[in-house]
Length: 365
Figure 1 (tube, rainbow, N blue to C red):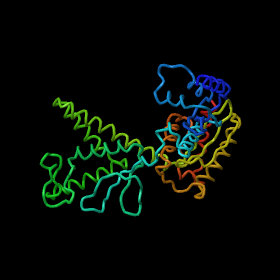
Figure 2 (spheres, rainbow, N blue to C red):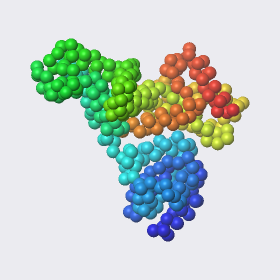
Figure 3 (cartoon, helix red, strand yellow):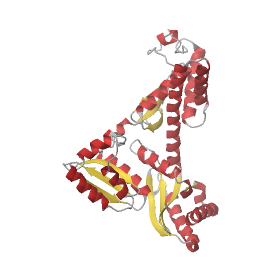
Figure 4 (cartoon, helix red, strand yellow):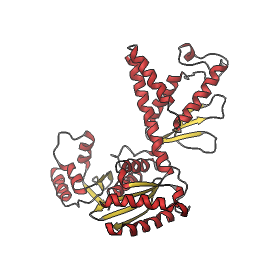
């Protein structure tokens, strides 16, 4: 075991310092882990260094590690995207986070019912008239968030048949009694409308109500209830962040410029979770106007043509790419810009020129 590890360590020392993806293999040649790296040599070498802080998962991975391959990419961004695609394709046993796409879930609201139901679904069916939000990465977080909403607004009705009789939860103070009370029924429908508005990003009153519940519980020294609402709020914020990510990636045409080395950059045009175009350029301050014109030509071609820029719907199979792109761009906010749809019209091209020029000038400086 030690001999094999030493051999792999020597192999790692000979790796390139370029960004890329590494694939760990077991004795049968199966890929058991896929990782990304800004610097392949430095990252892979960390698996062969003695450390007391090594996690049990990594320790077990190293015990089963018999060989590794690598794929070099020109940029760290491409390494992120390639890692995600390989994990979905190969489903390595140690990549738990993205191993099971079926674990992603949607919030489903059946609005055509007398009592619109609020639930979760593992799939999206746009033919049944339901409203869907998501997909979300963690089913448990979604379930906990919905539990918090039901708890906060006391819509935990246990009367499945919705007959004209109160349910057990009503007697426990957990249900407003919408089965027997018209005003409570109207209240329930208002709550559902508020939930829809909240998940659409148009209303934060739901979060404010929960924060008020937490504050009131704390003031009366009911710390158990306060902690419960704190956890609810944490899950609710995950839903908000997820919706912001999906909307950002789904609705925007994105120009991203990643420096590779001195005076060399790579241009990416991104729509949804897809890279529509990428190309490398030598960036010189005296050539910025020329490069700006070239980039604009590609932007109009790919973002202005429905063939290249189709209607985007982020599926649960693409959710990881969407989150990776969103988080990566946000961490490099000075390297990307959103290309608004109206800029693609000839009369508004000057706005696009100004933004692209400013972005290139910043990267070149």
